[in-house]
Amino acid sequence: MAAGLRPGRALLSRRRGALCALLRAARGLAARPETHFGFQNVTEAERREKIYQVFENVAEKYDVMNDSMSLGIHRVWKDILVHKMNPSPGTLLVDVAGGTGDIAFRFLNYVRSVRERQLQQKLRNHQNLSWQEISKSYQEEKSNPLGDSQVVVCDINKEMLKAGMQKAQHLGYSEGLSWVLGNAEELPFDDDKFDVYTIAFGIRNVTRIDLALQEAYRVLKPGGRFLCLEFSHVSNPLLSRLYDLYSFQVIPVLGEVIAGDWKSYQYLVESIRRFPPQEELKAMIEDAGFLKVDYQNLNSGIVAIHSGFKL
Amino acid sequence: MLRGAAVRAALLRAVRGAPGRAGLGRAVPRAEEEEDEEEEEGRPVGRVPLYPGHIPTSPLQKALLAAGSACAALWDPYRHDMVAVLGETTGCLALPTLRDRMRNDPEGYRIFQERPRIRLSTLDMAWLRGLPDGALGREYIRFLEDNKVSPDTRMPAKFVDDEELAYVIQRYREVHDLMHTLLGMPTNMLGEVVVKWFEAIQTGLPMCVLGAAFGPVRLNARKLQVLATELLPWAVRSGRNASCVLNVYYEQRWEQSVESLREEIGIFPPPAVRV
Image 1 (spheres, one colour):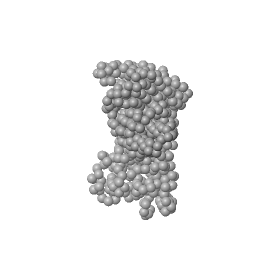
Image 2 (cartoon, helix red, strand yellow; image 1 turned 30 degrees about the vertical axis):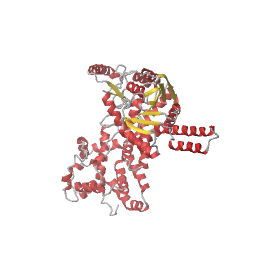
Image 3 (cartoon, one colour; image 1 turned 120 degrees about the vertical axis):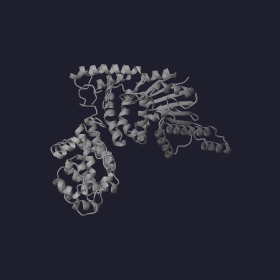
Image 4 (tube, chains in turn red, blue; image 1 turned 90 degrees about the vertical axis):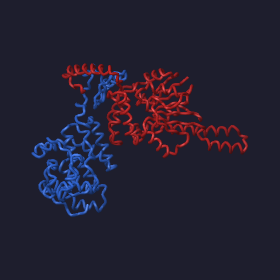
């Protein structure tokens, strides 16, 4: 279905274009929902399959590639997300499309340091504690360093979960962490379970974003917070051109050289362009029932954090 | 290079959900109705794949790929895919010359027309193994088994923007193992360097030249000495003397003895050193 590139072939292409539009209408009558995979048009089932394969291929080199593509800046973005979340000890977090666990580990670190500060504050405030009370407080710190906080990492892809579990073992995270295989469009959790729902660089790969948002609303407790970190739309024209140049020229090359996989990273940059921009995503989140929905641009819109509350 | 206005317009269209009619190899989606008015003038011609496995690339991407694959191959010599990519992205001058040499030779022309591929599925392993010792087929099988390699691990061409040149480089890759057999070199570092020198002189591919120049860096002193005193002069002389190795229809010469084939091509007998 290549279009003519020279003006002379415009007429032929337009005729072919009309024919293709006719065919697509005819196919539409057969009711196979069309969606996109990067810049290709595919059915929903094909899209799910292709995305699964992409992440199966990249799982092992996922973190290395993230570092090289974003020059390490993705770590800052994820830090900002967790700081915005500002979780207190006792928070129950579900990190959907959490794959290799970046958000989960940051959450655990944050909660642990908040808990330490809490305990130190308690000690400082009660200057007249007996030795028994002080040692009980030390024991509390040792036995419950996370303050009953928990994070559930949910991902649809087995390879990504595997990579995440290996990383957790390697870095020494074991407490307060669970790994669940599940689909963001149909989460295997009960209603009203979690305090915070995060999805970092994952919602772009979901085929039915509206269903994922509805599921997010369902599994959150009343008062719970929805946080979404995702690549978004750059409005500054100069930056947009540089960003496009970098995305389309450099990133697939990095994918080929580092991971030996051009096509997956071509998909990555195309899927970013296909994703709704900030305002549209905000409207979709509001449609799912969330209130006080807002977004914060990072790096002039290369990345945006959307936040909403179930009230 | 993507033009800003066209990209923004296309992005808006994509965002509004208009089905972008993007075939493989397109970098920007476009709606059915508006086609050529907003077509990028500076887009490299032919952003459509020309053969199965083809990934069209811009000159900038080719340059980045060449640099990146060179570094990756130096860092980890076992990254055969990086060596392959380096060959494809830097071969734009040498490959047409090779193709012309193939076309101008009767046997080479036949190969070019018939496009044979050396694969496990196309080789009759049992029959080749049954050939007498010294026959090309028998020695080739012996080489594959001794070094535990298979012809099926050759990467298909991805970044060559011409279907004929893609076949030329594919043929070069598949014939590489036969080079090892004809030169009598194993697949250790020293053997690979010798074969690379031979191929560099024969084909002129920059990847071979780079491999020949940088390969010896990883050899120890003793091997370097053997290389410099015995193997290199022989490889260079043979390379200069031999006719184009891509012009030999190996698949029709399995029964021919290795020595007679060497004489026919013009490769001198290998020196008696242990590689």
